[in-house]
Amino acid sequence: MSPGTRGLAAAGLLALAAWPGLAGAQTASSSSATSASTATTAQATTDAARFLASCHQSLNSGRLDPACQGATYRGDLERLRVEALRTQNPSLITLVGDAYSSALAPVSDSGEAYQWYLMAAVRGDPRAMERLADMYRNGRGVPRDRVKAFGYARATARLAVPGSAAANQAERALAELSQE
Image 1 (cartoon, rainbow, N blue to C red):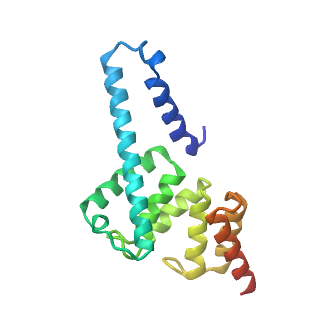
Image 2: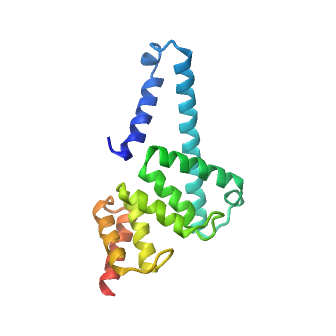
Image 3: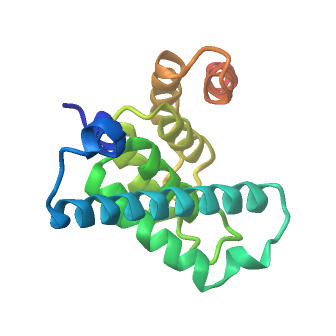
């Protein structure tokens, strides 16, 4: 099973465990407690991911949301880091990189963002590849490297959903890099 599908499989198993016809077969209280604990953890991770994505969008648009500057942000980021490493979900890994990439974020660290993006890119996330292409093209957090930028932009263009923001950005980057 690929790393990206493990999280989906776990979510599917949770859904099956909660299915009324199947749940009645379980009589042990420990398995019910485990299911409830897993569901609570999954919900907390989803909430943390939504919060961090919202903060990332507001920081990128120039709006400074006070909630994104405090302990809540750091706590949710830590929960998401643990879950991303546990599940190896490329989308979660990219989201952790996004949390570190913004200069306005309370945990801004382009080197840390690079490591998380690289981890997600190796697992096939085109959004992480797009961000790596941008980092190399602009020399943000890494030495400027046109060849690596071009390589990541090509990989993004091949893997991204046609017409998606990542695919469009990759096409623009390829056009710019081809002219340099």
